[in-house]
Image: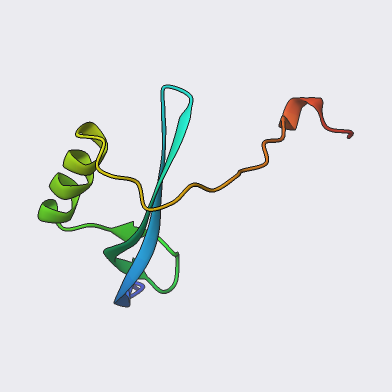
Length: 77
């Protein structure tokens, strides 16, 4: 008996985050296809190219956010 695997992909706007040389970069409202069952995000090649261009060319910032950072290995067991 073969199990049938069905994925449901939905187009959504997501927030893309990247840690580049210790700097957290956040890009909001990125179009993606999201697997409803797993949450995995898939990007079209043109979207990836635009993300890379935005990051590498250091496009004008929209705004800054403050992010708390915790160290898992230092937290109480």
